[in-house]
Image (cartoon, rainbow, N blue to C red; front, side):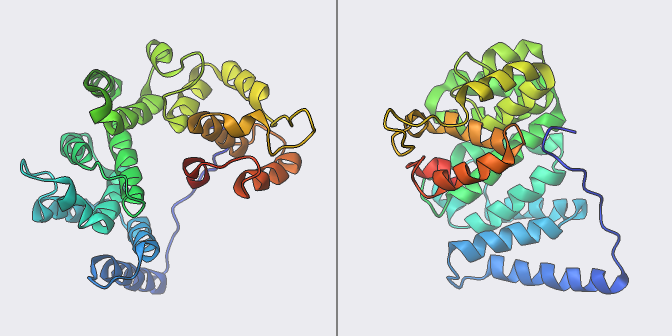
Length: 275
């Protein structure tokens, strides 16, 4: 198993637990589809909860949502997607877990249209990127590479699709993909994808990068508030923090340093805080 991961066995539910699970799932769905303004946090929780209780048998349901909502129609717009972002997020989370290679093209089309950068819409966007990445991984390395190359050639307009393809290549990429995804500075790449790829193919290189960048070094006055770490680009910081979370550092030391990241002493950008 990848470093920092734990095997999770599927629970064996009693009949009572199965009934209660179904009731809870229905409650999540009602909250998800309600026109009532419960706030974005409630909608995100409902989408995550419903998808977490979903099974592969719910794939036809989320595929039907795509048709009913017109998310992948030729005349689909970004506003059509964001108008129902909680439902789209729930669908994406199900596709991440159970989606099949045949779902890839439709999900890619939706992702290309989902361009909003509003704080309200970011959770659904991240879930959709993740879903496309996982489905592409199931489709295999060659398809993931084709999508990556096409998105990179298209430039900024397909940045999200390129990131999804990176996620896939992190899971199924080969040594031929290292030069593309693991550049000298480890920048412009999805951090999770980079970690997965390097842990499989060049773990020593990843470990050396971590040791060279963590723990944060204080400034000349011995203070962390002006540590070089704080000024690095978000993706570099996120990559390092994810490695901390996967056990590359020393927990007894790093817990206190992570607090300094969260309280702003070692970080001031929102993107890093999200991760």
